[in-house]
Amino acid sequence: MVLLFVANIAAYLFLSVFPVYYQTRYFRLGLLNPISIPFIVSLPILLLRTFGGPLYLLSDGLFDPHYQYAIFMTSLSALSSILFMLCLFRIFRGIKWMSVEKINIVPKFYIRRHRMLTLSVVFLFAFFALFFLLTKEFGLLNWVLNPRYGYQFYRTGVGHVYALCISSLSISFTLALIYFRRKIFLYLIFTFYMILAFMLGSKTLLLSFLVYFVIVLSFKKKLSILSFLVFVGMSFAALYANFILSSNPSAILDMIMYFDYYSNSALYFKEYFSGKIDLFYGQIFVSNLWNYIPRAFFPDKPYVYGITLVNEYFWPGAAAATHTPAFGGPVAAYADFGVWGVLLFPFFSISSAVSLMLNYLLYKDLRFDTVIASSNRLLLYIWCLAPSFMQFIPFPISIISFLVLYWFIGIFNRLTY
Image 1 (cartoon, rainbow, N blue to C red):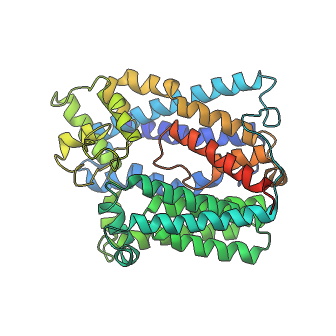
Image 2 (image 1 turned 90 degrees about the vertical axis):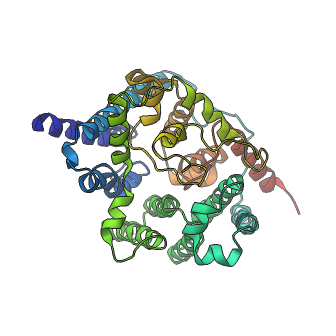
C-alpha cells in the first residue's frame, strides 16, 4: 500500500510538470519563459499546498487514504486536461489561418509608445478612483493600514469594484513595463506597483505581479539566474509579510496550516465515502451562474452557490461571513458528477479552450519586438500575461469587457490633439 501511495504522488508530480515541459518544447521557448517562470515561482507553494499542509494537519499525514484519493482525482483531472490540450494543438496546427496576423477580430491600429505610457497613467488613476470606492465602508486609512482584513471582510457588495481595481492596476503595470526601456525605471515601477498590489490584500495578486515582472525581464534580456532566484525569495517574503497581518508572526506552523486545501479535500472524500454527503448532480455547475450577478445590483443574491454548497455542509454559515475554505483538486467537478465529472469537465470548459487557443496564437513565433509593435500581438499579450487580469470577472463577460477595452486602446492611439 505504501508503494501504491508513493506511485500516486509520483504520478501527480509528473502530470504537474508535463504541460510546462511539453509547451516549452512545442513552442521552442528557452528555459526561463512565460510558461516555466510562473510554474517555477509557484512550485514551493504548490508543494506546501499539496504536501506541507496535509503532512501537518492529517493524523496519517501523506498516507491518509482519503488524501491519497484526492491526489488521484487531481491527477485524473490533469491527465484529462493534457489530452484536451494535445487534441486542440493538433487541430490548431491543421488550420491554415490559425495565425495572429491573419485573425482580425478587432481592427488593427498603429501603436504609439507615448500614447501607451499615457494610457498606463490613465488606468493608474482609474485604479485610485476605484480603490476609493472599494474602501468606502471600511475607511481608506483603515484599509491601507490593514489591507488583509479589508480584503477578507469588506468586499461583500463591492466585489465588482474589487475586480475592476485589480484589472485597472494590472493594465497600468503591464503597459508601463512594456514601454519603459531603461532597467532602472523597470525596477522603480515594479516597487511602486507592488506596494499598490499589497494594499489590495491578496497573496495571489502579489505573486502574479512579481511573476509578470520576471517575465518582462526575461523578454528584455535583463534576467540572470541569480536575479531570478532573488525574485523567488522576494515573492515568499512578500507573501509572508501579507500573511502575518492576519496571523501570529512568530508561528511558522500557523502559516503551514493556511495550506489546508488537500486536508479539506480529504475531509470531503471521507464524508462522501461514509455516505454522509451525496453528489449534487449539476447544482454546483448551474448555481455558479450567480457569479455573473454583482451583489450590489441584486442584494438578495445567495451566499451559498457553486462550490460553497460543499462548504456549507462542513462550515455552516461560513460563506455568509465571507469565510470560504478552499478545496484542493477537482472537488467541485467530483461533488457534482463523481469520477465522470472529473474526467469530462476539462473537455466541456469553453474558457479553457479559448485560453489554449489564445496561448497557442501568442507563443507561436513569439518575439517581444512584435508584441511592442503589433496591436494584435499586444491584445494577446495582455490577455495571456497581464498579472491577475480579469480575475473574478467570469467568462464570457471577461472576453466582452476585454474587447471593449481593446477598442478603447485603439481609439486612444488614433486620437489627434
